Length: 281
Image 1 (cartoon, helix red, strand yellow):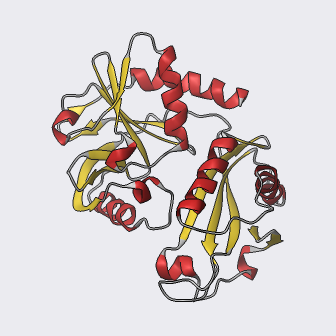
Image 2 (image 1 turned 180 degrees about the horizontal axis):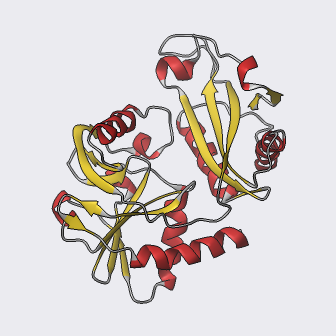
């Protein structure tokens, strides 16, 4: 099922115009959600990030786009699925209405909500190998736009193709200063000794909802110091642990970068706290 501007219909029954501005100009933003047992995890953070992104892109926010309205729309879309799954990945996609070329004729928006089932109701730590490499063909330009979830993700697409062609499970993305800022699908954390680092938003990394949840947990990790600081590629092989985060998978440990193999003790410690935080809301 797809929710298009509040109307539910079968996927096969809904088509978008070739003049869609999201398709033609990347004039769209989105939120990817994890919904478990009828609850959108970290919904308030998702909602305010979406509203902030729309304001930055000068989209007109409808009066009915309240937190309660969008939550209801997401949950009703999931309830319409003919399945017995308890956990879903949902996506809210918002684009500016068609009209105009680079200059839009209107700032009004349309939206769609889609969802797909997930197997596990809790966050788990995947034991599968996750070998990464730097993706150096293209760089992300640091700035406020790179922190948003827009559908201008061609670097992530090309990086994913590169990873697939070279048998890597993920890639590390660089900004124009050749600092490591994130992975293809999440924020990056580096552990060295008793210090945990993650790149600052000023370096161009995504303003991730899961990143925010992880940051809030560090005051409970008494054995570690934390800092938001730039990460050089030279630090990667000296690190004890690397992991990436996003709201759908939670925490994914990186197991290998070139000749360096990593542990996952901090990721394991954080996973239990994350599941507790998700349950408590």
